[in-house]
Length: 184
Image (cartoon, rainbow, N blue to C red):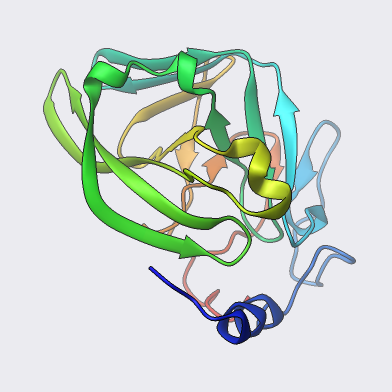
């Protein structure tokens, strides 16, 4: 997958919101909550020491207390897990590739869980760009396809199918991916 510098700059410039101020439609966070509208663009990559667990059915795919949260305006955090926390024996490479204007090209993996194969449930950036280099080769998981938990709290998936944000009780939106949010 190749993208020209001009196309990359156009994609980066297309975003209406960049975290400098909350839009009027944003929910106000309570104590111990975060608004996705306070997150920056380009995204910030923040270490998180809470226990993160990911299950494929009843099968444990990953467990760590060394995740990195990608915080990007308008989206719930995406958790990236270190390679040594993932059971690689459950992963099968996929042909799917996508491109992020901030991180670069992503590659995907199918997961073999207790309930069978789950297609394109995990991704990573084998050569992440710029500030995203800290997540190079770290794994992210779709909570819409896998059972994801942060300190025992079940994660709700970000709407829209494409996005991999993790919605927990500390996060307020609204979030990119919900109906009517394509222009964000």
